[in-house]
Length: 237
Image: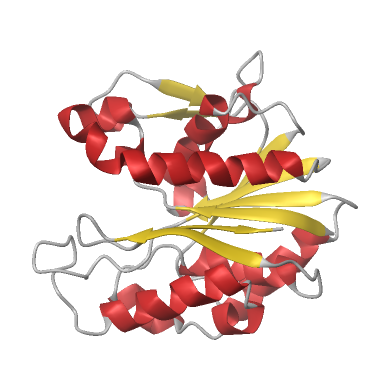
């Protein structure tokens, strides 16, 4: 059963070493992410699953001890999921789960074992929901750390350029995440999300499936679009 969830964005720029001289620009976002991870710890789960968008090579399960790297972003920094003493050989973490591993390491996470699940942006809403139900049903006390960004089309300088539909999409996503509204999250249009380059749609819908019937209350801790990309931080508890 899902006992808590935290939603955070997944840009590698969250990691100060990657952001370099611009690191201070996301200080408030990092602080909100830290608060969200603290809510997960306070729920005392027996299992934490990190869910995030992934390209084909990173889709599927990643065990505790899986390694992620920010070397592709010009930084010689590696992270280990769950802070395991020994890295587990295998597929590298997708960047979204590497950011999650960094957040957990920053919080000195030691509350429960951790595993990762990378999902593809084309995964249909019903399949996302089913994946979430399976995660929630796997243990009596499951928590999720859900990574993913909103639209990348909020401004002219955004990665996806300006799309007039972006603000409305992000506003509804932020409302649904802050209200723990599982039905509204499952109603997010997958094609529109792809058009707007909203990488968080599939992970959020996994969360929606996991949260069905859990009776959790939501709170939106942060919503901003500093680089034309929607970044949300929310907690369910």
